[in-house]
Structures are given as structure tokens and as C-alpha cells.
Image (cartoon, rainbow, N blue to C red; front, side, top):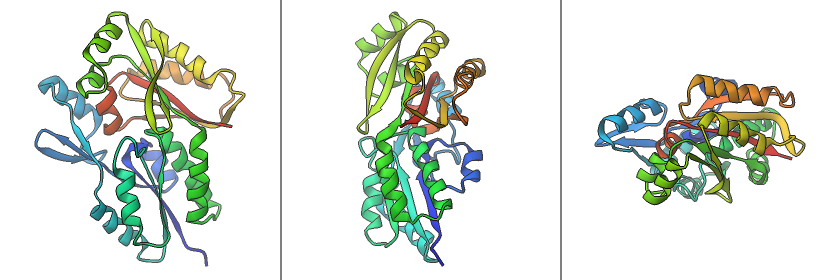
Length: 282
């Protein structure tokens, strides 16, 4: 009898509860601090609480990785019955989560941490692919190796309406933020080699720039794996999300268009009006 393979991820994968349940994924929430209060991402805090706190206090939250002992406790629990485990984490360039998981995993056979070299549903795409492989009977080692190769083809990007959160979080200078806001520039932030870089800058109202951005990213979709695509946002107006979903759906090439909302980690860095399309290239 083959061992059961558990697929787990830290909470930065930004998968909806429906997807988590459908694919039987275990989620490990990262810690979020607001002032002197500690929370767990997606458990007792959500992005709207972060936005409300910022409006009231001007204070952004701090996020923290799980430490080695927490991973050790989790791995011991999940493998006690002889199960194997594949754990996905946010890019190691953005957090110490992967390194802590890697160090803890050295005490366990059959535990495979995977550095997604991504964030949000860029990592979520790998998590879903892993869950499908597990359902097909692949071993944890096979899944980890396959997903480590697949991550090179993940295309993750977002357009940010306002640079206020990036500026307050120390990721954008005051001059750059002022200039972008003055000129109505909306930067496209892309993930490359595990790091966030600024790509094309769009000009105009947010809804209009998103239409151009989606057309640019998808093109004719000839080089995209059309099995699924994510439209992931950080609390955008429903009308704007619907417009973007319709644009993607009307192309008629994707088997599944999945809409998710970014969790606390991504929302804390980018702010409310942020939206991206995320997919895997061929």
C-alpha cells in the first residue's frame, strides 16, 4: 500500500476556501502583527482588518515566518502515521519560511519543502498541480521534483493602483511614489527568479490600465497552459474584478478561470487596489 501524500502550503498561496477543500490542501498560516497584537493569516485576521487599521492608525502590519520548532511540530504530527508531505512556501527571497522549513525537514524522511520562488497564486498554481499529482498516485519526491521544475514556467504579476503601501513598507521611495501618483502611473510588478521587479508602467484610470495589462500578459495565449488561470485581487471593487474576469473568460481559451482574493501577506504590501492574472506558460 502506497503512503498517503499530504499537500500543504503556507498561507501566502492565496487559494480560496473552496479550492482548499476541493483539493484537500493543508494551510499553515503566517503570523501577522498589528501593533502589539498577534494574529494568524486567514484565521483571525483578514485584509479588510489591515486596511481599517491603516486608515485609523497609519500603521502597516508586520508578517513573520513560522519558526523551525513550529515546522518541526507540524512535520512530526503529519508524518506520525507514515504519511509523506510536500510543503510549498513563499519565495525564499521574500521570507525565511522556506529555509526554516528546510532545516526542520532534515529530521524527517518523506518531507519535501518546495520553494515556489513566487508569491500569492503564483505559488497556488504549483500547489494545485501538486494536489493533482498526489491524486494520480505520485510520491512526495516525484511531486516535489516536478513542481520545482514547473515553477520556472509560472507567470505571476500584478498591477498596483496606488504606491502608498509599497512606500510605507519601504519598498518604494517617496519621490517615485509621488511621481507615479501624480502621473497616474500604475506599475506592473512581476516575479522573476524569486524576486519582485517593476515591469511596464501603465497610465490612466485603474480599470482602463487593467484591460491593457491583461491583453499584454495573455496575448493570444498560444504559449500558455490553458488549463487554468487566476484572477487574484486585493480587495478591488466588484465591478472591476467582474470586468477583468469577463475579459479573460471571453477569450474562450481557458478551461477554468479562478477568482481569488489575496490574503494578508500580499495585501499588507500592495494595498487595496491591486489585481493580477497568474498562469503557467507552456
